[in-house]
Image 1 (cartoon, rainbow, N blue to C red):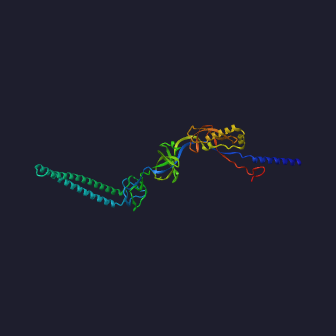
Image 2 (cartoon, rainbow, N blue to C red):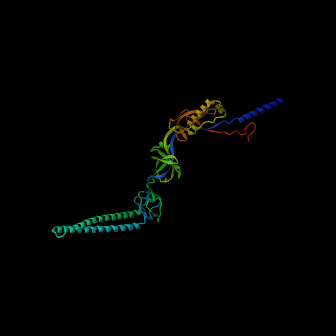
Image 3 (cartoon, rainbow, N blue to C red):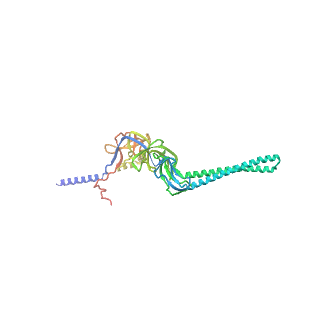
Length: 419
């Protein structure tokens, strides 16, 4: 009986010790994996910009006055030369009438000067004959010559006066014509900044009364592209974009211009790339913010791996850390070298052939991560082209190490929990 009791005690003690060490054993590492797939890789440059009409004309006024009529409003279709507003023409009509009177007066003065010249010419000729006959003195001939020359000068003065008054008349007629504001282009009114009864002044700076978009079926996006990406853009590259008004719809466009002038904002340098857009259904409106993605390069039917797989690095366990610590200086140097290689392997961006020397991890039959060298190519941010290496289609690559919680009931210390 005593032997049975001792045996039971020994069994219970063995079970207790085994349970203790089992609970103290760290949980087995778990990994999240994704399959290597075949598909398309598209490299893009992202930017934001504002939609604008290709040609936008700000219509002002060249004369000052009070607006008496408005012929158009927001969204009105206009034709070139069509009246769109009227400034009160009363003062301008009066100025035309006054200038016309001055011109008529100048014409009469010229006619009077011509009559005076004709009389002086006749007198001069008669006095020359009389002087030849000895009837008048030389002084009389000189006086008639002076009168003739003065009459000639009077003609020139009258002609100058007439030209001046005709110029004033033309200016007054032009101002009267400018009192009717006309559209300079065919288009649509996108902005109206005045109302009837408002006084506009064109003394120093011409006020903007209307903004007319010439053709809203053709628009453009002025995007801000980072200086690190501007070298990858070329005229003719296709682009897609979305706007907040239609978040589920993608619109298409193309790069039509890359401007050389830098835009510096808080020491950040960007360049303007213009995206041409077709807007036949008039869904897009000026001023909308567009999120643009310009397609730089595309490859179809290639093997691709998740970018996260290139950034993954397994966490070292306690035993592995101890082994590394016991290797001394040489082991530390090797560890630093390996870390540098892993860091270089985490850069998934670049052209094909420039991703050599990178690593991904696969699971061996025991569930442990095993490094495998790969060569990468084109990247779209989420996936990277697999250009070479030992990884094949449908292989499971590790993208994340999942931390497993301790088992319930586990003891943190033989002496009990810490406080």
